[in-house]
Image (cartoon, rainbow, N blue to C red; front, top):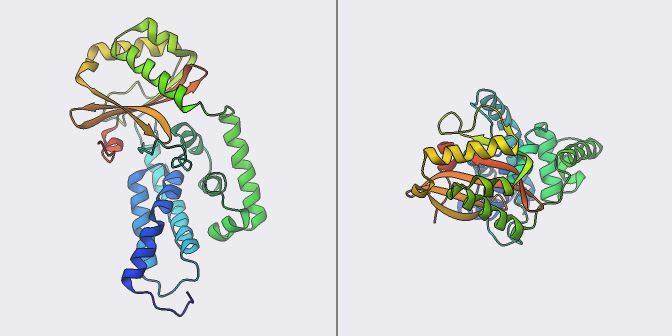
Length: 292
């Protein structure tokens, strides 16, 4: 397609729709917010629909989407500064198939990516997750390949320092998640203590709109175990439906109040114990979850 070719509205729509899943994955991993991702994709579509001809539609769409996402980070960072309690990414249900979830970034890694600069994060996502070469990324973010290599190195070292472990086997993670939920549902403090690592950390994101575990992450098996069981006694878990789903590539638990998502529980697992608990109860972050 040359720069002088006219593109019919139907053809333009077809090209965009064909790339939408890729664009969503890239932008979501840069932003951690489904609502903001959808806004960026709308901006990308508007920019695309005004073009009369593009040599490389995929490259053009990715460039527009990434740069719109980088601009959007300012708004998200401002929102995070005013946020009540720990801020966690908005969870997304992903395919359980290991091939299909290859581009899913775990919630735990997304939390680490929040500590990068927006540009470092975009470079990390494009290079480490989607396999873009440094010169390709340089063209997308309007930097030199040398600058992109430096950004990529800095981002990779930063992530490795905070996530030095290999990811847990999905089967083990599923089993540990079920043990954790069974202990909570049964109100069994001893069973819960067995499944929690001594230095376990709890991030509870209620956003000031739902029950959470305080304004900061909690550390320590004793404190967290007693808090969870105490909370379970205040609200009978039997009133909640439990479904096991793959969330951001990890086997996880989805708690339902009737047909409405009440909480998403994602666990970081080391060996056969829980080292991190990510509990999202903010209804705004659960409203777009598709519950089948």
